[in-house]
Image 1 (cartoon, rainbow, N blue to C red):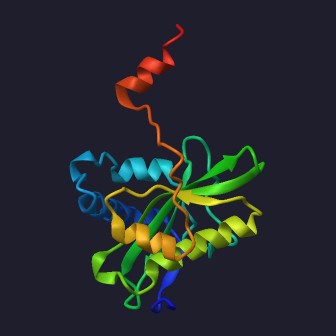
Image 2: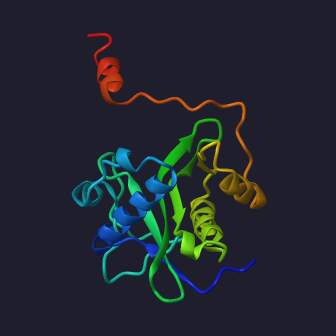
Length: 183
């Protein structure tokens, strides 16, 4: 299915309220709205934005440089009415076995009113184009086990479940404790 008419571009600083709104809508969908700690100021400090007057595409990203303190980029999708309909927030990763860069998709979200129009696929295609243009190795992401509609969608576009891997995380007090484990 071809996507409905839309425009995809890298986020600009002026888009931060929209990004935060989309993050909160995604968190609500995932039953985790109370867990959102992001604010407009933290997003401004951690996303590499495109300049206002420059076109930035997936095959030629023209944003502020990414760095350890500003690791993320965000693609925004605007529907046929030029209203924000979705986003793909991502950062770069690395495969040691392939010795190639890739993209980790932190969050993909399309507003419920804009689903079934091919917008999720459009955002994933744009990210895949960026990986291919950079001669990268892979595009990867996580999906909640209970999110069957998304799992089926991802499988329909060729994604494979990584059943042999278990996600691990250290955060909050555990991260502080680990950092001082050998002190």
